[in-house]
Length: 430
Image (cartoon, rainbow, N blue to C red; front, side, top):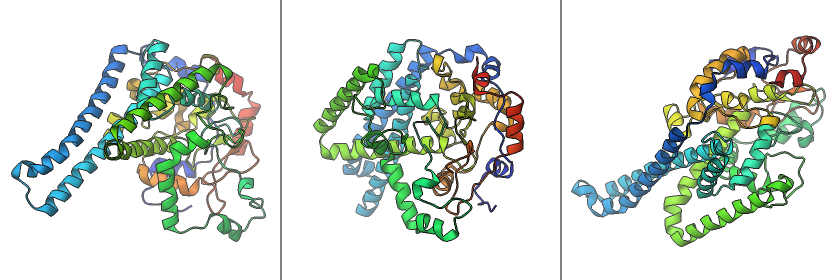
């Protein structure tokens, strides 16, 4: 297999190592994590929420000052019209970049509130999550319902809610033993420019396509399924009032934006909002879409195996830790320390993520997934290589435009694990 110079060494090692599923139990992982790391601290959580809100206000005030600085020739130091325009443009770019990151951070805090990890009070978590997500035009309770369903069945081909792989049959491809190069070319061949355009469409509109049309969601739901209809099959009957409340929140936020006016919304809200959506799509896509990470069918799926089928990435380095609250750096720990459906909520605050990650990494051993590949290249790699999986087999890996998988399953080891008495209930028992 050929590698790109930007492929991280961890990714290359996984490609070269036949896959066998983890056998460590959820109980062993939970017992290894000190209990004090799992307790939410209301003061710390409030400080992070306040910090991000103040950052958003600071950058908004910064942007409000750009025209004033421009009219004053930036303190009299810049008088050339061309230089003033370049300087002004640069300041707007700075605002859009950082406000987009702050927005993504606020989404992450709302995400953690949805998991119940900011405060001990369910009401406090939901209030903060609702306010933060509504400000980002996210239907908090609708997202929360499907996100919980996703964590109950992560990487399950039958039951997962997000980034469910397409099948060979979805593209009407011949079977693997009959398909030829021309069959794959007819479906997947495209120019690099068109590939770039599709990536930009996913990054710019993917979040709202998911919310409004369930794009890349589970295909068990009928066409027209969305996150705004209280009677959507995505939700239980008991969720209905909360979905209505989410919609009321979105209407209220829409009224605020209408009051602001088109020009102000475009400059101060829309551009950072699109960048926020880009980060949401990017880190969630990369959590669950990688050529070396498996998906399972029912005979091989367990909660722990599905939870471990994700990747930690150093997205944006320190900026990612600071603004995105460890959402990519410590995602494996967050996922494996969510208690299964009977006690669903994790009690692992994000600020303890680095410490918990070290422990989970030791417990998972070779089954822990990290990738130092530059994240934007990883986005391109996953977008172009994670195209479909086979219709059969209990453990499957994405295949590329040539019908090739980056990794193979070590079938004899899978069989040995099964014969040793492995079963999902035993692995997931606490």
